[in-house]
Amino acid sequence: MDSVGVAAAAPDAGPGPAWRSKCPWGAPSTTSISCSLADVMSEQLAKELQLEEENAAFPEVVAAAEGPFITGENIDTSSDLMLAQMLQMEFDREYDAQLRREEKKINGDSKVSISFENYRKVHPYDSDSSEDEVDWQDTRHDPYRADKPTTTPRRGFIGKGKDITTKHDEVVCGRKNTARMENFAPEFQVGDGIGMDLKLSNQVFNALKQHAYSEERRSARLHEKKEHSTAEKAVDPKTRLLLYKMVNSGMLETITGCISTGKESVVFHAYGGNSTTEDKVIPPECAIKVFKTTLNEFKNRDKYIKDDYRFKDRFSKLNPRKIIRMWAEKEMHNLTRMQNAGIPCPQVVILKKHVLVMSFIGQDQVPAPKLKDVTLSSEDMKKAYYQILNMMQQLYRECKLVHADLSEYNMLWHDGKVWLIDVSQSVEPTHPHGLEFLFRDCRNVSQFFQKGGVAEALNERELFNAVSGLNITADNEVDFQAEIEALEKMNEDHVQNHGKKLSTFSSDGDPPIYDE
Ligand code: ADP
Ligand code: MN
Image 1 (cartoon, protein in one colour):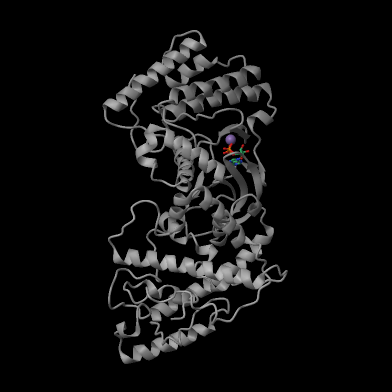
Image 2 (tube, helix red, strand yellow):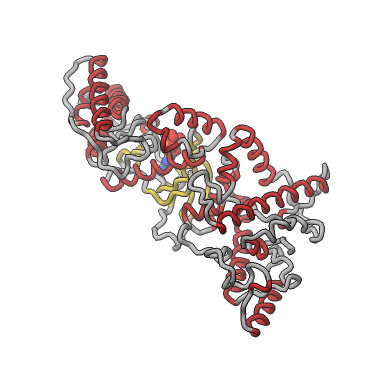
């Protein structure tokens, strides 16, 4: 079988030793090579290098992250189809690797190079697509994959010729359809369908045609948008592709540039698009928060998770990528809670993997200033203080949250009021250190407004009591903190006795346990 191209990529999914004995990469030598001026020092190479690096650092983790059907958890090896697909993926990858070697050999150090890109089985753009399906296309039917292992597939192009049990006119029609694939855009690889006497049902042909058409448009848009985006310089290729997808789907109009690069995240500004696929109105301006998935971050978080007994059960099996996604997920859930309580904060637009899109606080690409950067009149300062006091109470009581990184750095001044941002680390008050975090927040807020000349500002202990509704009477910080820790311990014991573990991540759906 000629195994080049999209159309021919799926058919081998059928189980059985027949295709196992075939060499899946016989093709490159027989296919004609399309010349392209695309530099090899491009995305694929960058990705390759990154993969090599990751492989060296996290051999087993990366293996799990890369195989779309090998996701590190719940591998269902009892299904023949699943095994066949996993093997197929392996073959495809090996085929691609071989292709890359050929590419390298041919190009050498030449300045003008030949790209084998179009002959790849796993196009870089699609290399994470099955992960996407899990995340955001879970229910979508994939017309290129058989529904279940079946010996007489409904769609003629799976399996061998004798397996296709169709009427005569359908065979003719199928062959005609196969021939018509030649009319697809030249960069759409259809394989040698005629040579292998492929008979495409109308249904499959139409699906392919549709796919070819959207691929063509996508490719055009990709190249067009790529020129204008500054986003690509600040993020890894996988993230870049995720961002492109958002633009290409019409959800975003353009990504204009980077607003902030922090240790754990990069934030971009974007103009919202007018996509109708998501059941949402996209705000005219969006902020895109990309949670960083750098190697260093991997290591740090990995260690943190491993050392924390509470995460052992649940997270020891997860790969670092998934853990990063959880931080993004956490921010989304927390923002949603805040939104529901009416606290001024960014509105969640969509979460895709480790990328959170929310409404932009600011105007015309200019983000609202942080409280630390804005000079407020004493009147506004006082207004801001009372607003924050109120918000902290709402956050605690209605949202059951402690911000845990509340300071003048994470409060924006916009439209004459304070907006809270950056809540990925926010926890429920019942978190083993929740009250300590709250106390820290209170200290930051008190100090900022006391220094800012708000005479009415409560001190940190008063603020803590006002927010939590607790009545800790200690009049000095050391005793106060000791009481806080005692309360936390009490709560932790309560949780242990009730057989429930609290974790930063899992607490969302649960009603908070809090008895004082
Ligand atoms: P980090 O964890 O890096 O501190 P933040 O969520 O605080 O992440 O975002 C970093 C910066 O990006 C913020 O200080 C703010 O200036 C800007 N920013 C983040 N979200 C928004 C938003 N929705 N609208 C406008 N600016 C934002
Ligand atoms: Mn921040």
